[in-house]
Image (cartoon, rainbow, N blue to C red; front, top):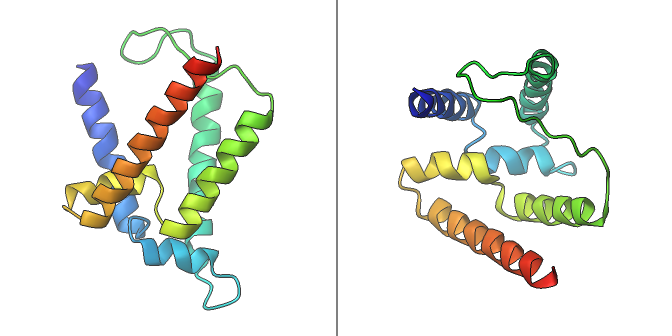
Length: 138
């Protein structure tokens, strides 16, 4: 049951990315191009996502058990540290250069986009490097 729920959640999320055009790098880069032909549509998508997320997290924080019977595991760390800032900066640079972030890249893999395959490969390499470096440091 959990796998079906995860599948359909991902399918709905991916469909939302496609409907809003956020799986197209030129749409994202248009939002980031403040000096050119700025496209504000990503701002509306973000505002909508923040609104949905706000109420969803509020509802979830009052629960002990998730819908599928698993224990509720919400993030508890709310500190801003060097690792968070560095990761955010790296994410932002990659997003600005490629016009793609992980969710849309995975959606674009479904469309057999070779650029998405390169992006996802680089993303997985970065995740592996971070995991290796974190373990080596400890």
